[in-house]
Length: 81
Image (cartoon, rainbow, N blue to C red; front, side):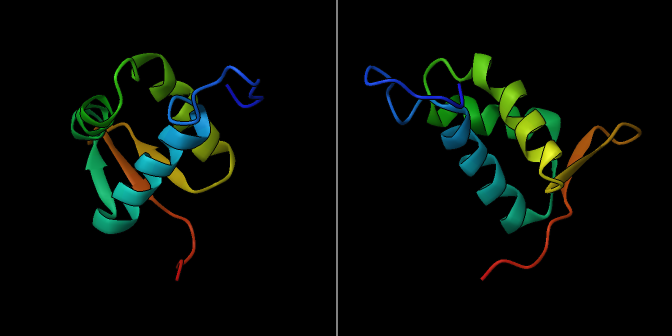
């Protein structure tokens, strides 16, 4: 969820999962869908529900692209320091 409440665990939000995805993609530039999904699952309990909204959020910001022929996500954002 993008709009937190006072009962929201900060580690279980779309922004938090998006950060993990973005950090991994910046480091490796290209990751397969399965590897990225497994990475999120390892770091967050119950992150299955947050993976797709997080990817959609990053896509809408123009930070990643999905390549269907190779089933990979590619970081296409600018250089971050």
